[in-house]
Length: 81
Image 1 (cartoon, helix red, strand yellow):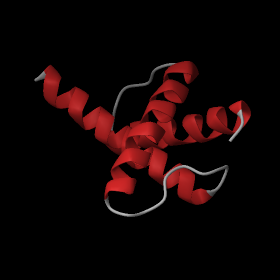
Image 2 (image 1 turned 180 degrees about the horizontal axis):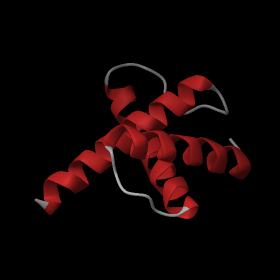
Image 3 (image 1 turned 90 degrees about the vertical axis):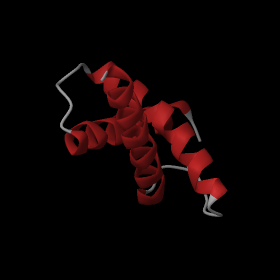
Image 4 (image 1 turned 180 degrees about the vertical axis):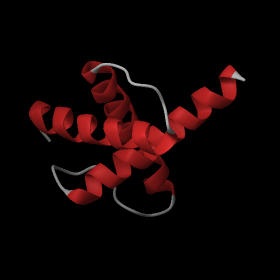
């Protein structure tokens, strides 16, 4: 997967995760970083359950990255409290 694909998937996943979790508005770069880190976390979690991870610019990759980003935001929220 190329750099541009990671940026697109990360941006979409970060925006989706922030809207699902009701997080405040931050910049576009933070949404991309959230989504890219979420893609790594989501890929790891999905591989534990026997599913594929992020494998290109497709809907499945965006879902996996969003799940990982939501997990990351939930962990961050729990640590803040």
